[in-house]
Length: 225
Image (cartoon, rainbow, N blue to C red; front, side, top):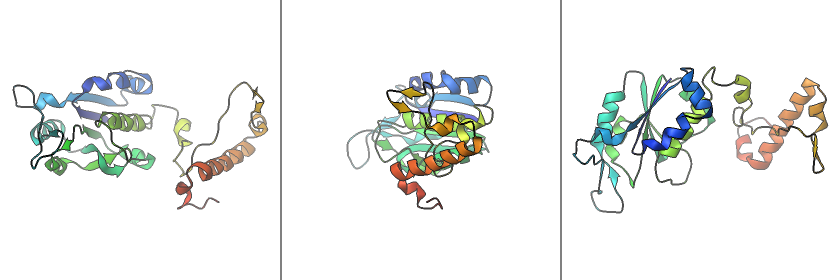
């Protein structure tokens, strides 16, 4: 998979692509991540990429031309263009799984007060990471990169993500490690039993209980009781 990111702040991505699982995925050639400065596509001497909005109003708006030029340069037949925006469809685990089908993803990080509406004409998906406002699309882009990369075959052990929260519309089950007793709190005995079927049953029951307690909305379209 190839991921290209268009941003005004490329240095923000230095740590994420040079750390942990994403770094290893890049080293294994499982994913190719490229960070592009939108200013490099400006035709102005001062590298301007934004201007005041027509009709007045606060803030600055990303201009069409640098974004169009960047996408024209990067896009191929197999590309999907995603704009990170608070007005987009809310991102979730099912979407992360679906994005694995794409060979090439171009992420556009919105910024300032917004972006020229005409940019949406070259966008395939407008995506939000939640109903709140951030200073820009860089952190949402990192969320998308991280959530997709860990699902790529061979990046991590499949068992590590198959039981993730949301994969079956349930939150994850509780996990424990040593010591067996800590400040009077004991690890459930079933986890020490070695009986795999009982452990499996316990974990499913705990997933349902955990979801009912924390996210009952996830159970609305399921048969879990």
